[in-house]
Image (cartoon, rainbow, N blue to C red; front, side, top):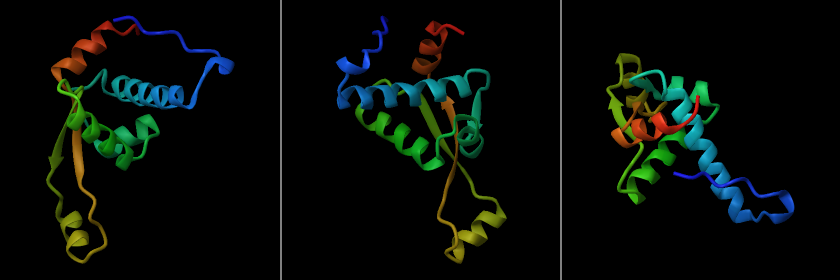
Length: 113
């Protein structure tokens, strides 16, 4: 897989910005997940600097529009504190474990360290 060179600023467009942001998100997630089997969403958020909501939305979007998703999301059951907060309406947030799919692991093996 050949990675195109970044265009110079005067050759760029706003469409390039979207591509670069997507590439940056992928690389951040791949790098953070490269040395672990899975990571919980909050830790992944801390390691990448991406919000938990952004990560979930990004992965769900990839799953919806790509047949070869690079990541898996698996919901972690809420602990007692989380259930209480959710019951009284103070938190509706779910937590997930995030891992690389076989396609993600394959792509990771082709990236230079």
